[in-house]
Length: 243
Image (cartoon, rainbow, N blue to C red; front, side, top):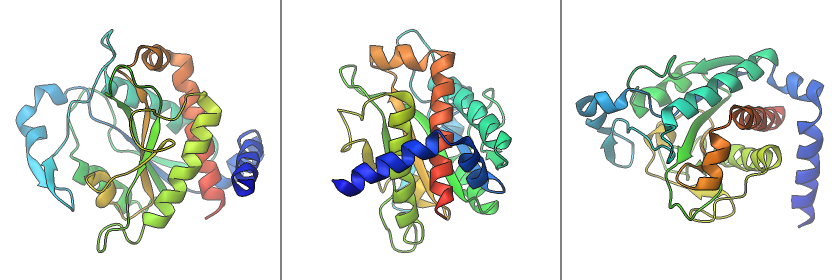
């Protein structure tokens, strides 16, 4: 309990200390992976093609979810990614996005993971919004277990990245931990190729539940998406300050 309290206090200090955050991010390479793509729906054969996810074969990509008012997950994730990129670049980081627009399809999760591997990213974050039950609220962070020959080299750092981002996201957005999936805002999954095929520390952040009315109202607001970006940047800075 004491360690948890000390960690929360240290993170709060870090989040509010801009010079420390900028120092930790300067010179680092970060990959931001905005989930899905705006025209995946128009390419069912391409995104439906089965590819190797390490522990199983899965479709190359999916269309994502949307809010009841029609705000689509791919548009949301790309908007947050662009906002996050701007913050990280201002802090001195090199930032690579896995897709450059929201008007295409893919890339497959195999290529999304490969992008981070090629640039030898110091950290990679895949941004999503969940399509959970309408009665369920909150966010969760997904990280991989240790799988021999796949994630055994990044599992420990990915878990630490998940813990730090969970804390920074909760502090920066005020959203609760998801009450319908995972445990206390964390989920471990071995079926996500984007994690299994990564050779750099990587997590998925399900930033909220688009099917929940309260979460959706927040995710649809530009000002809240900026808060999300700031919270993710703070967490990445905290993670990289310890590497």
